Length: 148
Length: 161
Image 1 (tube, rainbow over the protein chains, first blue to last red):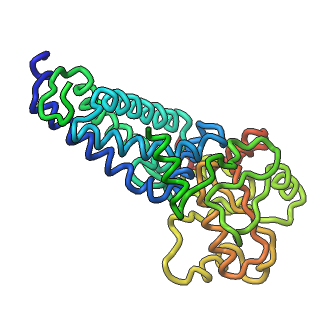
Image 2: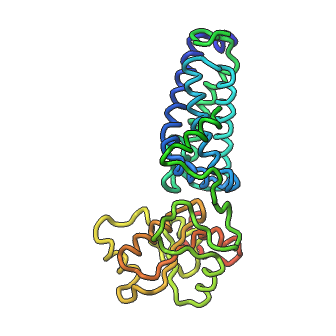
Image 3: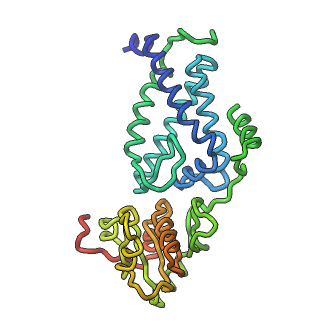
């Protein structure tokens, strides 16, 4: 198991996969922060005054983390942030399921309405979390621009 | 770093937004819930107190914009069901007239759905307004807020739960 987790190839695949997903996920949110703020509002989890700030910062955090993973710079920090964000997304989606809210998750683009499948989004988040946890515990540092 | 870049980009972007937003988090009977997707020109939003008042006065038609199964499982008593997601593509005006009647386009119509996470009521109200219904309002708190204030929901025999 340890050998698998430390695999250079698997770690590289995880970096490219999660990195690309985070870069892609950030795109629409960066161009349209107002719509992303509405998506956050639909979760009814956060105080109104914090919503716009989250809508401004989270997409850029996703973009920077995604690029850092792909290129292997500021790697440990990016891996930790990616894990934190994915766990937070899972908790947010689980809370919508628990409260029986049917909302568009706003994961890859700003939600335009209030329909969608939180179960579907959460399942995918769990898959991404597996890869990001692998990066977290992997000791592989090959193919990174920034050497330790 | 993301904080700095994000704030900077937001400042220079033409689509930038205020750092501190003004959103109502949850309804509490302190005025109507207005979703951020609301736009100028939309029908007005009403709160639970006004919805209850109109219900008691009686000269109003509540319109549940959710699908049939949700309508059957808990709706404001006396409501009619116009599922927004299943509106016909053709002759929408005729369809509305068949449900709401032909003669009184100025009758007070209150659209609603399940609550603050649902905006079917908003879209339906826009359609009604566009087709000449002059007295449409939106109760965005919906059936959940109605239930929260213990005003009683009606369940049909079709409800499977």
